[in-house]
Image (tube, rainbow, N blue to C red; front, side, top):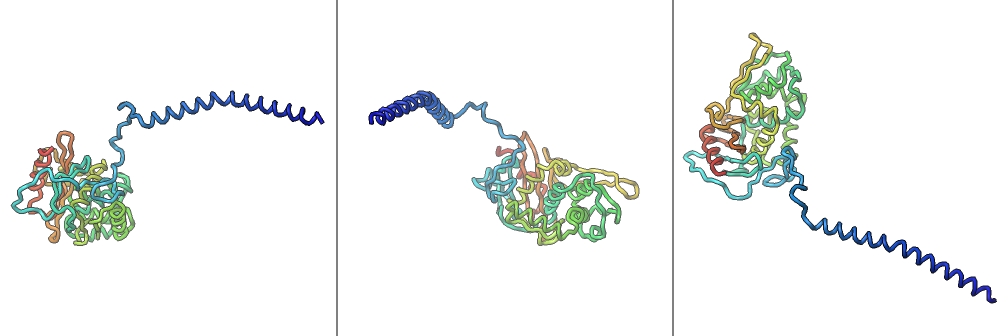
Length: 329
């Protein structure tokens, strides 16, 4: 009868020794864990030195916000007050001056008013073409490209192949409607499918004022507003191929025509008048739209854009607005 209690007593003493040993081993680990948690908490709530914060890359995507939906790849900020107020004698129907660096609007006149944009359509055409093509691609000149009206390169050789970048120059410098059609067919197989591509891009980019009816803008159905066109200007000037073209006063290229060369003279009024710092972008005109213009100039590290829809004198008005914008700081 004594064996039961003695055996049980030995088991209790052995278990007690094991528990004491485990407690002794775990105690340092518990202390270390508590110290580590305290350190993490302090580090999370204490700001580090300025040098530890990585600077934003200049080519990093722009943060969403402003007047457009968050999906806009180059939003503008319509919030705030104008930096200046011009005295208009004959104002444009709609206008805007924007800092193309940060998207801040310096001046606005009916920035969301939707109007015909004429050949400003070609800014989006150029963006769609450069996104899906290479400069040296051969573009076949089809019958569709030769059935155009309005402005054109004018000497596109039917059935022959032309270097894509030459046509892109013809699109942006002389506003060639024939070049627009040729590029649209090359990219999408037909102009109708290319126009669908443009409208899909406008939808995805949150361009709520913008609608395309053609690749060139001759129809009244090509419509936009200064706010949306400012976004397209920001995107175009961030594309090196477009930015390189639109700053040219004139250009010449080898071309499969008599004489072997194509000469192009740009329409940009700021560049033609020698406006200081002018580096782009695009003109437009139809009877329905009036004279339209998106202009870009750079001075002292700042790049400003001006949008004018139905302006009585785009060159003069753009220059005055840009002068006021640069002076406003």
